[in-house]
Length: 194
Image 1 (cartoon, one colour):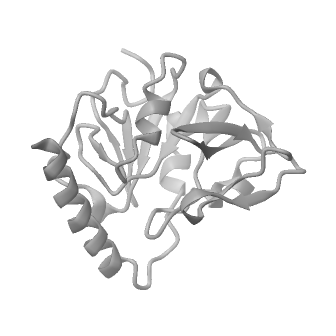
Image 2 (image 1 turned 30 degrees about the vertical axis):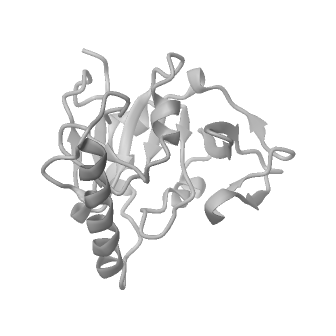
């Protein structure tokens, strides 16, 4: 079964993350920042990292002219909030730093230009293995979302094949430490729909 394959791959990647996170450098965000996907994005979804995930919060200081958006878990969905100068963080479910709704502005999925997405593993066809709760699949699978989906990964997180089910959302782009991997999901290498 695909769910069993996913679980085996999750366990392998979590074990690998422990080995690879020793003396882990800061993720080289400049690879992303040289892309047209970044240059053409006015609103960008970032995330607060868990464990060995690449830290996209380093983009906060480099993206003053953009609307920076972070997710907050509410039940089974991710709610989106835009950062303001008054924004404060709270600790949410799973110990993740999340927007405090009282100090952040709600933001609509339809207004996102670029979504930076964490994962345990990715493949070059856009497959993504998350942690199994489906939060990002539901968000990015929404009919409102029309932006670019960019998986953010360390080189060691690229695998030959991520098992996929019908509800799994493919990434348009995988950003690793030194390379942009356009997946052939309907976008060209400038991030424009074909």
